[in-house]
Amino acid sequence: MSSPPLILAFLISTCFSLACLLQAHSDKWFPPKTHSGSMVQILFGDARRMFANQLFVKADIYYHNGYYPSLFDQARKPAHQEVADATHAGGGNEEEHAHEHEKEMDFLGGPKNWIDRFGRNFFASEHSHLEKPGAERELLPWLRLSAEMDPHRIETYTVTGFWLRTRLKKIKEAEEFLREGWRANPDSYAILIELGRLYYQDLRDPERARNLWELALKKWVQQEEGKQNADIFSYEQIVAHLADLEEREGNLEKAIGYLEKLVPISPDRPTVEKHLLERKEQLRQRVRQ
Amino acid sequence: MNSSLAIASIVIKELYRRKDFYVLFILTAVLTISLGSINFFNDDRIVRFVKEACLLLIWIALLTIALTTSARQIPMECESRTIFPLLAKPVSRWDVVLGKFIGCWAACGIALLVFYLFFAVISGGKEHTWPLLNYFQAAWLHWVFLAVVIAMALLGSVVFAAPSSNSTICFVVVIGILFVARHLNQVAMQEPEPLSSVIYTFYYLLPHLEFFDVRDLIIHGAALIPWGPWALASLYGMAYALLFLMVGWVAFRRKALN
Image (cartoon, rainbow over the protein chains, first blue to last red):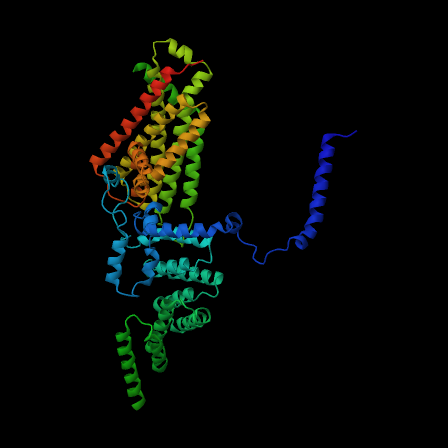
């Protein structure tokens, strides 16, 4: 009377009907989250941030041609990510910075015993950086994967944007990636600074660069002003860029306004003050004429 | 020696009759080619990422082949009772151990050659440079590493009850040595006595398998390893392999086969 295929068909149809019924109510019982999340988010959850950081470190390892402190070396002395540091070039005394970095990367020290001495023949044991022109492309997969893992890791976008536009001359790709970062982090002033640089230095579009930097300044003020550990470095960058842009565009009054903001925070105060006086003098002459 | 070579030839035949190598090679090739075809910022000259992935897969595949092949050799002979007719012939237990070792090592050598040829083609095709001597050094050191691993697994196959437990234990030990051995002296320095001395003893006694892992040098296009240290590392590895084989042989001599 009852054949197994019929029972099976009955069970399948019951399951299907039940699933359809439950699906209709599932939204009430388990309200959907506003951000449903990508496959990466579903698979890794919050662990993806840890992976993103690890992938970013991997880019730094590549930047040093594999010469990098292990977990054991880092336990003694935390490592510094130079792949990111390079984007800050010009922010201070570069020679001093290079010397500091050299000292910091001497994590191996002298050989401690014969195994240590002998073993150094078989791994990268001398400090070096990517040197061949265009070799920086090797960092890109890790940076891209890091951004995939954690789209809210702002440094990944700014660092990638920096390498893409300065060394690899991939302006279009840099712009797309920075915009992707901006979409994921609409309040990030750091991404806006880098995007502004791209428009100003690479695409020669001062209008857009101005808009971006002014927006960056607005965001910085909203987020950082009044904070005890405010990100002064970024503020200095925004103001310095705007001062330079306005000066080149001939808007001396605006340039002077930004230079006045720059004087108290600049690490090279005398030079900025001198520059400010020169611009003021220039403006006076212009008014007289 | 002739009987050892005869046993070795059977082990080699076994490798190419089994599916392990083919499956792992196809998996490595498919994954490497898929990774190589990913487009990062419209740059088709990115190569180190692919080299790293390919070498990692090669290391995993060869370690798996070496462990699974060598761990089951002696237990399989005992289980199927073919060990008795084998030892009834003028074949000593040392011949069996040595033959099994040579067979597994040679079989892994053939697999290693195929894997490294594939690696050279993939990296050369993308990089347009052919540092063949560097590849030779890396492949040779890898092969010496496999000799130590195979000897270790053969010793384990006499000591441990089942091939599965032997493979797992050897796998954990090898991975542990690869990751930690180089840093044991740093750990020892931070520990109080007598723990410090115990860790130092391990540091000096363990086979430093990390000497044979020169993937980073290959990935980042480093210069050739000086030939002196390279030859010494080979001798160091062979000495450990011989030591494990001897201990394995001694254990096998005392082992009751039924």
